[in-house]
Image 1 (cartoon, rainbow, N blue to C red):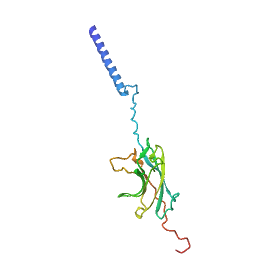
Image 2 (image 1 turned 60 degrees about the horizontal axis):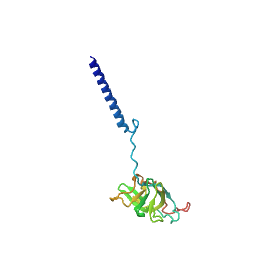
Image 3 (image 1 turned 135 degrees about the vertical axis):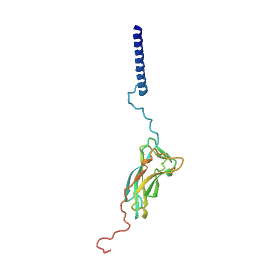
Image 4 (image 1 turned 90 degrees about the vertical axis):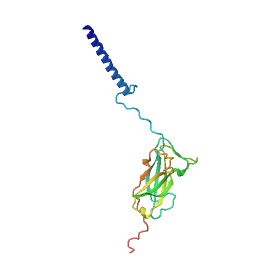
Length: 196
């Protein structure tokens, strides 16, 4: 009888040891074995390093400083392109990226004008550092079919539709919808009381 009791006690101790060991292994696997607390998530990988050009603030202008006066049905829009990425943006030439003025229809966008987004610098390079911005102005005469349509500014890359791809982390900020342009008179109004 004594041998049976001792055997039962040894069996219970072995079973208890197995349970304790399996609990310890489970906790070690959940915590990664580095002393992490229960419920902590692993550290996410760092974000990719790339530029992120986007169209920033825009405004309609009634006159372009240093430019010719606006003609009938012409609009001028100041724009900002900024680099919100975590690396500088560099291109081989000014034509590699442009700001386009477009109007949209159910059939798709129609481009009215296009201007380089980043000019060639004094050193001969096209470069926009991270957290920096450039400003510019685009102007175009609105054709009759564009009247009353929504206008937008869009950042256009020369590599669009090619295998080279677009050097931009986030294309969601490459389009800036514009409010309706202010009314531009097509002819001077007659003064009151002239009977015209």
